[in-house]
Structure formats: C-alpha cells, structure tokens
Image (cartoon, rainbow, N blue to C red; front, side):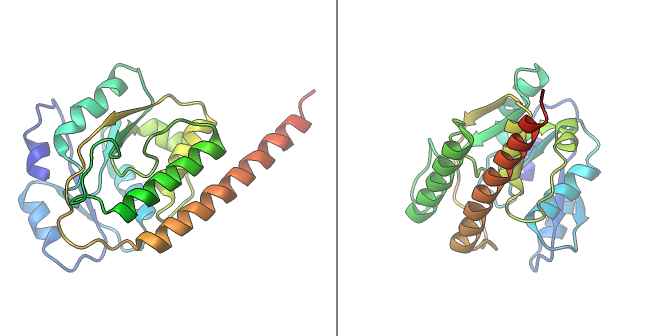
Length: 216
C-alpha cells in the first residue's frame, strides 16, 4: 500500500504510519518503505488518527486503514475536489463495489445498518458512513474539536461536519481483501457506534432546542 502511494504523481506527500502495540514487522517494513512511523502508546483508534493528523505537516489530510483494503491509487480522486474547493470532506464509498472475499455479508449488513440509521437520524444521504478512507483539510479537523478517542471518531467527524454545514462528497472505491488480522470486534464495535450515534443525535437536538430558546 505504501508503494502505491509512493508511485502517485503528487507534487508533495508525507506518509505517516501510526503504530499502536503491533506485534509483527509493521514498524520495520513501514520504515523501509520510507514512511515516518509514529508510536502511539494510548490505545484507541481515534487516538491514533488524532496523533497522525496533529503531526502531519500538510494542509490536506488523507486517512486510511493500513490493512491493504483501501487502494492508494484513489488518493488523487479523493483530494482533487478539496484542492478545487468543491468539497470540505471526501469519503471513499466501499459499498457500491465489494465482493464476499473483501467484506463478509455480516460486515456488509452492519455497515448498511449503521449508515441507514445515521442518515435517518441526521437527515443525510451518505452512502458509507463507516469508511476508513477519507480526505479533508487540516483546518477542518481543528475546527470540529473532536472528542472521541476510540472507534466512534470517524462517525463524530460526520456528525460535526453536518452540524457546520460542510460540503461532503463521496467517490466509489474498490474494497480489497484484508491482509493480516483485524483488531476490531465487529459486533461489539458496531453496537458501540450505534449507541453513540443515538446519544449524539439526542445531544444534538437538545443543543438546537437550547439555542432556539435564547434567540429573540
């Protein structure tokens, strides 16, 4: 995956790999491929993303899971609308192109369920809310003032992007079979995301109600 990014005709690029307690050869391999490896000792998916973004020097940030599932060659398509100021947040939609070798039916159902519930509660039309392949400007991330330290962070990005009326666009991508074993628990993590989506919607409605009561 790093080799794919290295081959991209980008004028400037910085590859950061945030590692948290990996027990394989990830760190050595990433360094050999020219990536800047960052060690994150605080457990949590959100913490890893936050650490990488804070250290990144560029103004356009691309985040992607490092399990080979997201093809690096989509990056130019993902960042072009940002460069042209046609979008504030870009998402790689996995759910239009998939097969059973890359996403189990149970995982597909879980993703579709979370996306459907999210869109219903927040009145949005996002096709893949749980994608791990995103691009945005660093200033956007700083403006959102995100709080999640775990698996809910990608969803929190969407919630607050909608709150601030950011323009969100998606591109369809091919989702490849994973290399290596995932640390995520699909059922438990999916349940946590679902509960937090509901709680966040309730908090959002209370916030709107409080604001309207102070408007004259």
